[in-house]
Length: 366
Figure 1 (cartoon, rainbow, N blue to C red):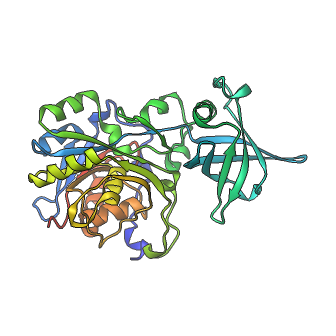
Figure 2 (cartoon, rainbow, N blue to C red):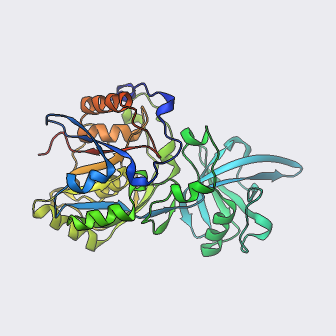
Figure 3 (cartoon, helix red, strand yellow):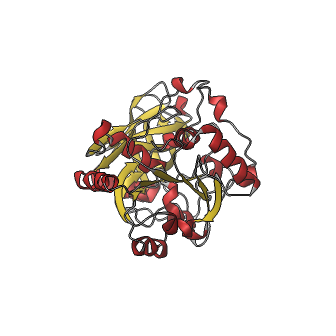
């Protein structure tokens, strides 16, 4: 399909710079293709009432790390400033990173990353620095960094030196601050490795979780370590020419069995966020449903895709021409999502990572 098919006019002021407070006070647009009305203006706190006892919510338990690093490259007497966003772990001491400007690096270069002024560096990070060597470089601008530390020591050093990689549409308007360390993390985050938050999950509070439990709705956890590739624009003219970056994810055998049981008894599996959806669909095995999964996925979902693992999707509002708007259009229908987004813009819903939510049902429920 043409990427232009997924374009729409989004006023700049509709991009939220801060989350709703409290988190579950955000608005939520319910989209039911084939029903009247198609659209229903609700709130996140209405979620339990919109689902049935026995339904299951699937949350992505990945934890965001401070993956944005700033430093200098030294080559002889020449010194250049660079920025790196870690996006895929490649070993105990190695990360693939998007680097700016990538042209300033060649294989073998030494890079020193430093903690921002006024921050405390961990003891494993001598004088607030972290050193690495450029081990490999791809034509796409990705760089493989081999750090001088490994394992838990490297994790602690990244936490000390790095900062939260806010999405570009937020970072262009304001800098990261102390509030983002909490705001840009779900309350159920457990497994470190993401460089972007599974943002639909940012709406959940202990009070909302208690209401979900009281309603008799199941909660299950999967993992997808969201990479910085989620921020990359689609530069191709046709969706067939766009390449997704790989991300690592996992679904345990116990979770797969539990979710198969939910659908077998006629209840719904509801993905909380496109990240949960993508790992669930990556683990779907034909007509047999979900199976255990652990590994990388680069699944790219566009209209025409046949969903096999989920029955509804809770997600935030996405940007024009993005792979995520393509995904929701595949699930609920392109024309339906055009109408939903036009409604959301007219009603002043807040978009993107810190914005409001939508609860989507499939266009083709068969």
